[in-house]
Image (cartoon, rainbow, N blue to C red; front, top):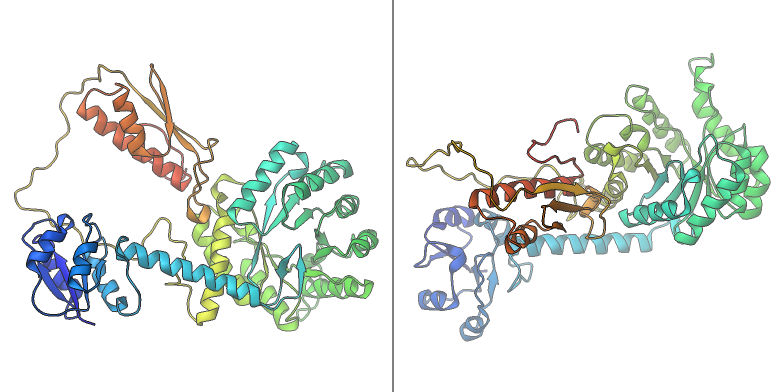
Length: 512
């Protein structure tokens, strides 16, 4: 395919380096490429015939008439000339857009294609059984079980709100954590609220037999956790309602004095599973227990591997939250890595709470990571270049740095500061002001920026709109004040998007 790339004088060297010998470059009589117009391009077109013309992705002119007149496609290139090296090789395979910059178009297409492949995979996936229409086990996508800690003590309205929040983040199963002070009545109430709020499977999380039975009889689809100490007390309810159960090793067995070739954890887990099967319990989920870093995580991963070698079919429970809640590291990378490990181990359910503030967003992170592992397995590749990712604080590549001219003025601090006669504005964020959207992967949980002046309070999420509203209302009268507010509003927006704290005039603090 013969491609002509149109650009301006300032970007010509970058464009030539990016396209190399894969396309011709047309430098128009204009400095800034984004200002190229249909008329300017028409006057400069060479006589040579091309299969496609790429115009800058930031160009706002309409090239539709020129395209019809020339009889050849005129498509939007990328917003950054550097990205031409990625776009040119794909131009022959994909129909680029007349209106959407090529890099944005390709990114969206890759993501849309990835989502379709995931849906196709799940539709055709083999599974061990279904719960509320959700496939469990087999080669179906790993499901995210999201725990609401202390669910039995929450008011009904708060529990419903939390369930809807977790469902919106991508949870596949809602787990209701019972507190030590819970009684059967509070469990019944929590399960009924959950079942009336969502169509997702609902689990009850407790070792207490009385609470487990109450949860089952009130409609829980799954119960956590059964072992030799409580299974006999709940077996009748489990069998009557055909409830799915998570089987765990017997507590304290790892401290027992056994022969070196006998691992009590593995043995007790298998014994409990076989006993459950002998009772007629069919919907089983095995939990070898994932230990935190510093408390045997490597040995616990070995247990998972050994379990899968001995039992290739029983759905496997992987407690990611045991690790993320007990490490002071960003949960995004931890969740991505643990999901990859879980995928290799053949796990089927990824368990997480969002109990601590640092673990907020884990549900959405695990949901995205689970999708990435499906795509990676299909391609027999590492989980990269899939169309979806968990790159939040880092980027796959940097754009070229700007060159600093020799004749440049270094910015100096203003020697004298004077307050704006129009008054001061206080900038804060409110995470409770959810409703204007959630950032992709769940890193942000919504919220609004709150700007307070003695005359009015402005609320919003768009920095430009907040600033122009303040100007229109006469709350800003000085250029330096407007610049300062633009900087602080941008910091507040970043804090909302990334789930950080924000304090006006203070830098983002490490170890928030």
